[in-house]
Length: 135
Image (cartoon, rainbow, N blue to C red; front, side):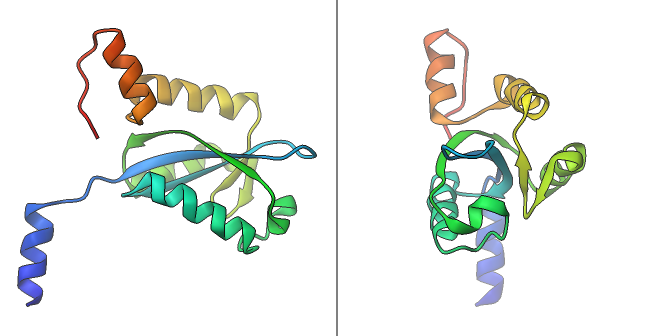
């Protein structure tokens, strides 16, 4: 039984993505969560639920009420996520959250402009005539 499951995983590998989720409210500076998921849409909903449940013990997030916005996602896994976390360690708030200032915002914009595979970017690329792969 287990070998069947292994064979299925090898024959049908799941694509993983590194995502960027922005959290804002009216009183605080925005933050961004950088994480990995095989289902980014589901992960955004899960993060929202986790915030409302007080899972993140980060300043204002632990009280819920944040507005979330998916900035985009790129193909990648834990090595890329770890590298991004290391690059942005000076802005770390803990638990994959980072203070979103102009430095990180510009870096994320550059990454997403070149590598994003979210539906909005795919649609924009198709309208400009670029060849894209549907995710």
